[in-house]
Amino acid sequence: MRQSIRLGTISGIPVGINWGLLLVAAFYIFNLAAGILPASVPGQTSTAYWAFAAVSVVLFFGSILAHELGHSIVAQRNGINVRAITLWLLGGVAELEKEANDPGVEFRIAIAGPAVSVALAVLFGGAAVVSSILFSSGLLSFTFGYLALANGVLAAFNLLPAAPLDGGRVLAAALWRKNKNRHVSRATAAKAGQVFGSVLLAVGVFGILSGGGTFVLAILGFFLLSAAGAERRRAETLNAFTKTDVASAMQPLVAPVSGGITVAGLEAMSTGLERPIAYPVWGPGGATGIVSSAAVNDTPVFQRVSTLVGDITVGWDRFVSANLNEEMSEVLRRSQAEGKPHVIVYDRDSRQVGYLSFESNLIPLRDQMSSTQVRGA
Ligand SMILES: [Zn+2]
Image 1 (tube, helix red, strand yellow):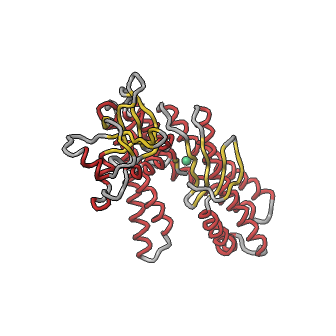
Image 2 (tube, rainbow, N blue to C red):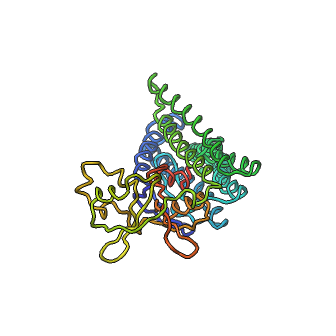
Image 3 (tube, helix red, strand yellow):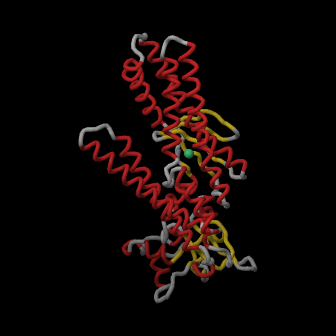
């Protein structure tokens, strides 16, 4: 999630907001000041309505921030860094640097957010009761009551057992503890997320078609559906990768080629090969990267005579390293963490022997990034 405005740093985590939030905040303030507040607590000045509306909405987004901080601080305590917290159109996102590698940790990180929301609901509820006794104007107690309700809804919605919602993470952690397979458990929770997202989307669209204002439901449903789909694909891929080692999945590296020859020239060298291979590419200053037979095939036929191998070479800055006997799921995790989709494989004597790419033959890396490291509201 892109941060448009940086608010500051809490517990070492950059906190910011995305511009979409401003839009939705303005809508909420207007809705409260011009509709809900005058209807519920009549007889106040319009300045008072606008002031209370603005304060309510700021406290509401503060509550979402507190929810995300709940996830983040528990993650930090378990050795997982948090890159950023961003508030956006549909709530908040805490970006964790890596996944929990234990179901207990997964559970605690997931439950911490809703726990904070429940605590806030109780706190605001209490404040509503106290202020209704102390003050004659109902505005203050109404505002506290509204915040108690909002936090209660936030907790309840997020506890639905459908990934990527918090309840889905709780479900995945529980299944993981039982069946010892984190990927299968996450795929199951993501399937539940797909079902729930579809239902929300259908209800939202049906509501819009019949003249209702269910636009937010439709957007939320669409967002959940796509995020759950990405999460499921990723979990299934990782599951397939467990017990597969790098040696059996890589393309072997063959003799180096010059970056100055044409793609057509390289193609002529490699016709008749049974399996994909990759070549180290040499430039004036030494090895510049890797070109694979897949990259040759991806170059349009009519461009192969005019394109140089150097132009389709993947440079070293986009590579992570791996060893021959490493598990594929481990390598994929590292590739995601560093945002580098290509892998150069070394043998025991530190010689480059193979090449792997998570870019073309699998699922897009961006897809995986958003599902692993982003935790929705
Ligand atoms: Zn949450």
